[in-house]
Image 1: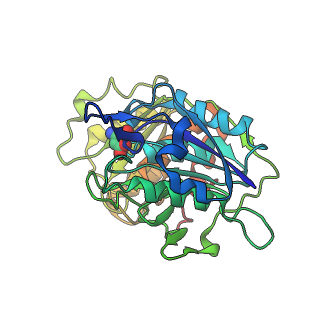
Image 2 (image 1 turned 30 degrees about the vertical axis):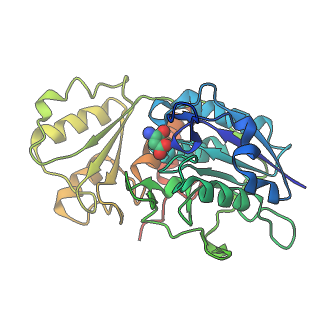
Length: 341
Ligand code: ASP
């Protein structure tokens, strides 16, 4: 019988109505089968672990990513797959972070959650949970896990974790991965798109738990008053600045902005350029308005999501020597970015 570890971190999915008070409360996941009897029909051994107390995902950060990564790493040999129930708000951050912290995966880690609590009749939580479990348990003809990476399952679609973003606060289709196609689609059957699945080149799991928050992200906007930002961008408190630029990686050519970036880079800081657009990639140098970035050595973030860019930089700061960081950020290590076209 295949063994799965189900970890409940918190979020909407794990809530049921208290029969006495009518209020929504987090339910005790050790009674999972009582609440979701459908799970008994799987021939699976599902063990459950929970954050205590369960947390809204806005409260989660690096120490929780570390907790999850270390639970998974320490029980990696004992289980065939892992399902993580997580609030949707920051799921793409946690899931992206885990894709960098746990490299060399040969087993699935599937994140899911829901827009409506599992105890509400119209919940999307039951389907999300049941199918996430089925995906985490799925094997090929040789008995190997079909999925061998970190993924997000939501509303009939399986996304690569470090390509996914939360795109809707109210629709059941809460997630999307505009720059990478679905890994699988759940219909009457689960349709897998084999050629899109990530396969590691590493011989074994490589778990690294440290991350650093010496990063800053700026979403550029027309008229941004850079005179106020000099203090915020001080190296070495901030070691990587991520700029969310316009279109294919463009920005205004304001002298103050350029001087600020030049000084930051000269002091040893790295600047990563990602686009504000939901889909498509940065192409530095394609327009006059991005040639300055090329000149001072700004790293092109290609088609990285903001969540993947941030967590990759946080990971790189703690685990990659400073001389190799720029090359590391530019290179896909867990399928998070596409090669420049
Ligand atoms: N605020 C909740 C969270 O992210 C929303 C959800 O679970 O979907 O924890």
